Length: 115
Ligand code: 5GP
Ligand code: ZN
Image (cartoon, rainbow, N blue to C red):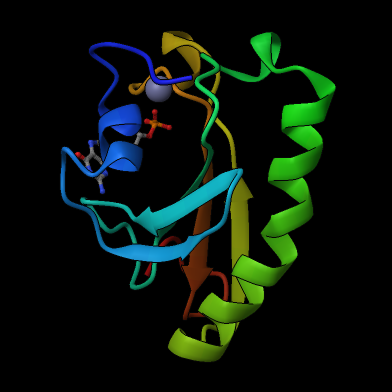
């Protein structure tokens, strides 16, 4: 279900352009507009849920089921030497868009921050 005024719902609906990495009936993945590292990707459920607290198990399960495939696609394309998965919940934890998302953060330098 699309949620009015949600940027990520607008991205799923194509109202806001995005660089698509992966899409199926349940999940959409696209490059973060502000790349912390090359290939920085956001993976989101097509169902609007605010964050992990409000995520039904079925939505979480479909979302995480796709993450290994998407992570491998990013690994094959960008050839990072590692990657972090990150999920921020609520403002205090740096959530700025209130539609659940998993950051995939490729890493290119050993133990050197996000570079
Ligand atoms: P958060 O801080 O909520 O964990 O992450 C939200 C992320 O969404 C940020 O990294 C931000 O750069 C990204 N973002 C915000 N607006 C847009 C947009 O319109 N397009 C894309 N591709 N990414 C966005
Ligand atoms: Zn939404």
